[in-house]
Image 1 (tube, rainbow, N blue to C red):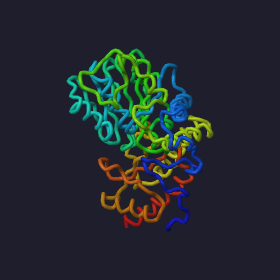
Image 2 (spheres, rainbow, N blue to C red):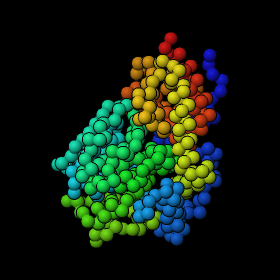
Image 3 (spheres, rainbow, N blue to C red):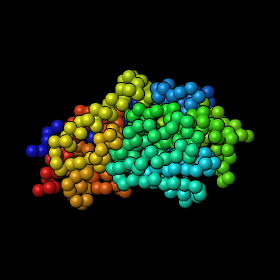
Image 4 (cartoon, helix red, strand yellow):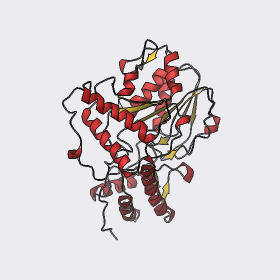
Length: 371
């Protein structure tokens, strides 16, 4: 029968992701609006975005946090164009975004000594085949495949190369071994449900040392430049952004950070994401017509949960439209390059009760289409 209870919040998009519970735009501190981002109040807000991020994430001493242009994509590109070229590169990809970084490294930067290690959607390449003397570029969580790296045991503590990690849908939702990661990038609109267009760049002391000792052979656009006269531009990591940020977006990000702190910090945010995944796992385990794209439970993402159905592609699209029309789930179709299916965002800003309310609707919609 058709369910009667709908999710209180039907926003399950994988980016921009759902706002935090209780969010109201009227509650934002908008004192910075209409002011220069270089004013005292503007710099204070941006510096707080960097400092509060470092505190909440528990970053090791010497790690720097900066706000950079162009979302997570901008942060990854900034790191690759500024840092790669000194050593051979191993680039790992098992979904569309990792494949995009591989394309940029091979076809745009045109580096010679590159090993591209790939796997199909739902799987991981052999992480142990990476070379610790090489720079390693990888995503921690495949947003379009629902597959995440299970741990960092394959990254050596005595590595000579840098690890450059796109962690946009993992930061604040998964335990990250910071001492194993030299560059970490993410964007506000993922786990924290913030606004788009701004990226976060986290650098280890090893990454800073590379920036100060190595100059790429290619020209760098202004928005990629992190050094001047062979020294790191420290201001970038104190809130002095390269270009003009949206102070409204900054206020929104600070609100999200305050919310994480209020619920108990990153550990509590991770617990919320894991509870959401657990609800879907329980549902899938008792039904034979719906499956995880990541068959191995150890590799399953607790943010971007990707599912396949025993329906053809056209029917899956009809199911997604049906749930949208019933106002129970918006934007849950699989990514365009991924196998046909569902992609349900389960990050910390999503309530488990809403996941639990959604699942009977998926079953009802499936039954309508499966006949």
